[in-house]
Image (cartoon, rainbow, N blue to C red; front, side, top):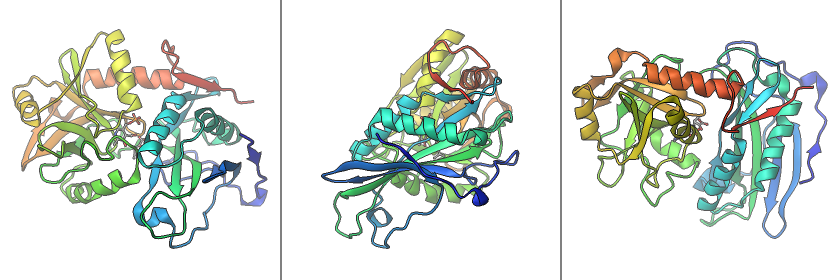
Length: 357
Ligand code: PLP
Ligand code: COI
């Protein structure tokens, strides 16, 4: 990939924030962009100023949502250098999503090289504050200016950077989660295992409705029988039974989360048993009532490890671990973030360090 670095207007440069990061509202000065044209392939790879695209109102993505995205993070190390966490896994999943949405795949090495170059140029935007990171958002959109329902022949692939704090306003405090008994998000054979905007659009109705009742997230059940636990809006879900961690199997309609995969790989080394199961929501509620479930937590790039403090389901409320973060969630949070930011050794080879010159 021939990557052009375009000049910036020095007078227009913003300084990185030092606190009050929030999540996803602030963006660095530069972005990566490349264009795809059927018959030509990817072209015009460049890093230039962060700014708007000029697109016709007829542009395909505005109408039929042919779109994919990813999320990964850059972490500031104590020595001042920067870690990426499993960026190649992320690039691979970007292509899995692209194939499902009939979009062109990207060269995974080029995609990661673009992230590394962008972070090198924007290294000051990686926060040096505990708990804050630089969220990396790659995306691809269909750009044909036409209303026929078919796969586009042109696309934009772009990567933007956003310094972020905790995803939830609760921080590491437990998150209240509503189990949707009526509405469904994704069905096996649909697009639930692709990271495409439509899945998130489909989730908004319920998440907005339950926000008014104090719930931060929605736990989705399978769309066919409405009884098997799938995942939460922005994270996978894990249930702790004493020393055992159980998470729903990849059903075809949930995201193959990189944090989930990392938890499953590291938990046995930390002394926990793990299993991936088909989980019936009624059995889970019974286990909660019987005190067999000692903790529940979500896991994801934005969410990290997020303890769940209570479930709302069919008008009842089920409190978990007295609405406190439990020791297993805290242990996993500490180990995972330790590997990510270089505070702990990385026995799995998950991190890639960018040296800040
Ligand atoms: N499930 C959904 C719907 C998500 O949006 C995310 C976030 O990316 C996850 C799960 C967790 O995936 P990962 O750990 O790869 O970030
Ligand atoms: C992520 O964790 O990267 C996500 O994509 C979650 C969310 C912000 C949609």
